[in-house]
Image (cartoon, rainbow over the protein chains, first blue to last red):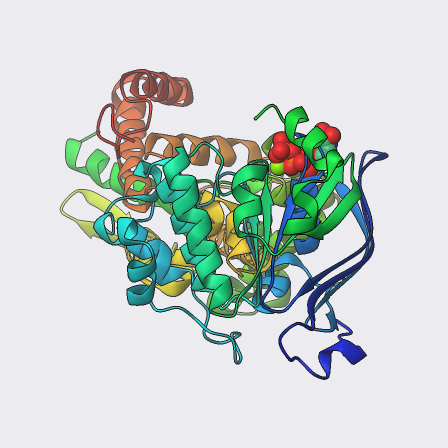
Length: 256
Length: 288
Ligand SMILES: Nc1ncnc2c1ncn2[C@@H]1O[C@H](COP(=O)(O)OP(=O)(O)OP(=O)(O)O)[C@@H](O)[C@H]1O
Ligand SMILES: [Mg+2]
């Protein structure tokens, strides 16, 4: 409820921090699944978070939303656009523009594609943030246009990912968090989805991309963070990270 | 017993069943929640109505909204207590908590209202209508009218309004709904408050038909359960039809076979229907 602006919110020029994490920890029944000292996502940036199964990637993005299934203890501070949001509930963070496309169950299965898009939008809380129109979304994801009358539950994995991302775009994102959008997709579709994400970032969106597919992710991200057992063990620009031995290790560890 | 009288009795009873079940139709059918304290909330609604009329002398039309207000408070409080369980969709715990809540209500009601039976007389229940040899009261007519209007209104709200859509989205996937910016706590609290109001209204209208006891809750929740499951979970119209079907069944079974076994017979019908049509009557066989 207190949302004091920090100095960083005063000038929101491109490149200033739009999402900032300080001392974020998540514990499941006493087991620390995430311990992240600091993390900053700059405005207009596409940052990748990679790591093996169980590294804490989903725990991280869920924790940013304060989502608490399975009673995790979430501690630490999260700032969105300079405002502290850690004390807000999940839907309030969403209304501030922090959008998560979760790992699974990412569409309303009993609603059609078009209903998913039409009903998951919120002009009241969008402020100055952009809401993509359904038409713009169909241009971005032609597959969805074809399937507009199909139920969410009838879509393929790739179409679900697209609909998940598209739905988030209808909710005026300031920051988009994507939890493994490439999971289960054919290689060609992985490129399509990730390149669309890149396109969104080039249009001004800030995105945090969780991926196990390091090879595909590193082609589109600006910066890469490697998580291992809940800790950031390496981070740098895509070019710096390409040759990082720890990344190679984790990448092989992921078995891809 | 003549056939026409049984038919009328069955229809009145059926509308009464449907009305009692309306809160649950929304809870289980729409929001995917349960409340096994429902029967005791019905009991409480009946006793509050009785208390207001008998002890303060206020008219029936004032007693009804007062009883509904108590129902809203109880429903809200109950959901407030178990909100975390609800959000985690821990239905077994929700079941146990609501069961416990019901027993607490029953104990408290026995303390407060005494454990002797009472008669809830209303101006409507005391005015009889005779048509040929058929007997009906204005209370019965009120039950039918209110039930029809309530169900029609509910169907409209659930299917056609923004609020109905939000409830359906929360029911389908609370996490995804929260991630779409919906205040799911508010929806859950609202649904329980509605359940409280609806069951209290039902009690104010239906309880005058029989003597009221603080121990009568269990029977009511069982009937409600049968109506909602038989109607096909998720279907407002289904609950209405199931209520009427069950009312007719109970009336005729009671008149021509044995009133003592009508609850047992009700369950046999439920079991048979569920085996033939696992989704309840409202769904097509094999459909979703
Ligand atoms: N609900 C939960 N209860 C207990 N422990 C959990 C829960 N969810 C996650 N964990 C634990 O937290 C750790 C991190 O899990 P998380 O789901 O964040 O991993 P991840 O990096 O997203 O893995 P994946 O690539 O498989 O999705 C794991 O050790 C996991 O077992
Ligand atoms: Mg994960």
